[in-house]
Image (cartoon, rainbow, N blue to C red):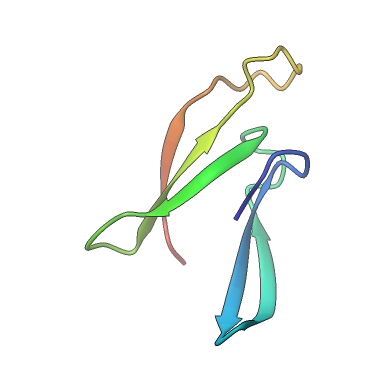
Length: 69
């Protein structure tokens, strides 16, 4: 899950209909994170950023790819 305000990516383990353990990644690295999508066929994700409102982060709006760890 991407976090606009928190500027991080959350990994949330799902157990049926319950949320389990959480981890955070990229805290403040890329600015505000939006959509997160699994890359088909590989252990990787795509995620988008939205920073073009001149929030001072220095990060442009882009789509990035990261391996799943």
